Length: 255
Image 1: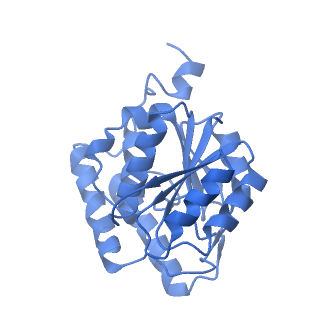
Image 2 (image 1 turned 180 degrees about the vertical axis):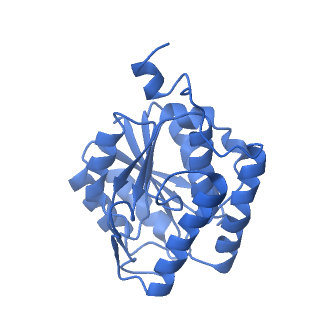
């Protein structure tokens, strides 16, 4: 078993899963994959089982019904923590996230507890998005920064890598959000706990096939989540000055 796991939620992704697994393992042969399938009616789950039968780096977690992106990732995190993975990543199955960028994540994770893929640091790297979608995404990032105090350029992004210690520290059973708000909430908890967060530049490309999971409900949830996090942190808008005891920063610079 490798020490790096990439969690990929799926719902009606039968057109993408085989190609994604091949591309990911070509770019990162040192990574295992956990597909979390929400009982896809198009047969994605059955195809994933066939793939797992022929490649022990591929694992499948079947869930009975579609409950949202956040719930899929929480289930995947819990599955990973029950095993010996040190690095636990997230990415989409639709090729909007480039598997070749996983090398950057592995390198950055040597110096950070949470690595965020960013579309916006040092410029805008988004392909095939309408201007309205780009404005929504950039506006959401500024909104999150202004209210929460988090200094990250792409807080709604879903291409990430957590060190095990971060996920073991966050109370995963208390994370109830989905969509963009899930990504914001997880990053905020890691940041507020004093873990070291790094950003690496990625290029985001609109999905090649299938339909987008974006909805108005997802946007509304994210708008409210930022305020919830602010009040949960007692209006504090700064990370602790002392790193978490299990942070890579604390291990490098013990008191």
